[in-house]
Image (cartoon, rainbow, N blue to C red; front, side, top):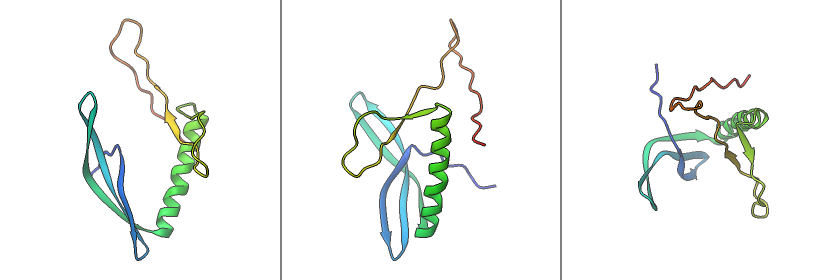
Length: 108
């Protein structure tokens, strides 16, 4: 079984000789106004693989939008840039309780 790598995002996207490479990063907040990004892994893939990945992630994002887990921003993106989705707060703690129940997300 392959290990699972948690990532908050990606960084350092490059393409050389038809291979797209990017780093997986974790972001930590060191104080109120400062954050640091630590590389936790790297990915290298062909352009066709990147396009397949983009299609799959777009499908997942569309399902998350349909389910109300994320919503598109209402602000105008820069000319030519697509609207970026923003995460809503999907979990509310029960009245008087500090514990929240997280239901599994069904994408199919």
